[in-house]
Image 1 (cartoon, one colour):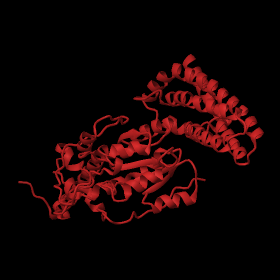
Image 2 (spheres, chains in turn yellow, green):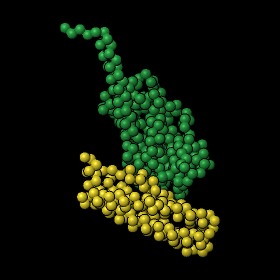
Image 3 (cartoon, chains in turn green, purple):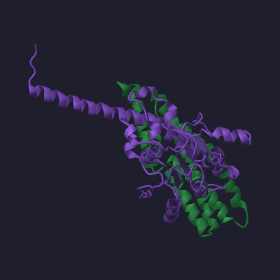
Image 4 (cartoon, chains in turn red, orange):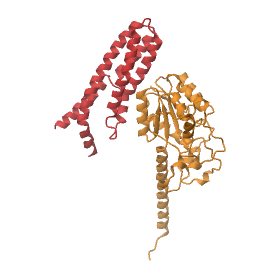
Length: 150
Length: 262
């Protein structure tokens, strides 16, 4: 049946996000908080993350343009950003954050800049993939719930 | 006329007893659940995402929750700003005025006096605070609450994304009930339950309820933690499972283990 095929697609898409190291266990935790009363909770949190972290990205970009670099400030921004990324289970983005902070501690400006470029790429890639995933899941979702009840 | 053997009578008594025990257990569970639903948690975190998460975690765990974004806002909520403290004296009557609990984010622009009056009946069973916050840190908030305020008996749990043993120890020494590593999970909240129940059991005479617990008066459970309870004796409480867990008000928490992830 078409629906079964769609279900499998969603499941495969979801699994690939984990297999590719983009998401970790925390994402599963979010899924466990989702229920019939709040069927789009995960998507809401992810959307909120991207909206909220946008200003941090901007702040860091601006701070990286300054000379000399204020590593304490950069580290502080990144600490906040990392916290949020960690809360949604964004595994790869989180590891870039960790790397960035290490460069901050080492006072390595070039390392920070390089890492931040990479971070932004991962951040954008994850967003795209999650958007596709949520879109498909929403199409298929309600049907799945109904099946589970039977 | 039916003749019932002695054996049969004894068996029936045994069954009745078991049934009774089961019924009692069920009622205790019901009571616990109802009390849980009245638990009010004040969550303090500067991160929007984490506030949303905490709110969800706590709501799903059947708690009422109020989220604030800073230590200052938390103090304001508790009526502790500017050294202003709604500390009632020990001779306060056990029957407190009406209370309020909310599950929405706190925002207040009321005048000083009316805020204080509002806070008279406020009930908070647990404070969960992030450690790293701009301005007042979670540790600062912990100390403000624990050191001589009317909320000093409310359990405070500190959360942090960083696993720093010295920080954890400092918070525990400072009176924190527990220290959680972020991101906080549902299982972490389950572990907090005993702390919350302990806060209730400090005032068991206010938890007296008839066995028909459906008619329970909210006010008998939800009291400002500071109200004293001098004429309480546990013999008054029959089916209340909470009284068995009565903790000494001044006792240190039995567990001071912090959660350390892999």
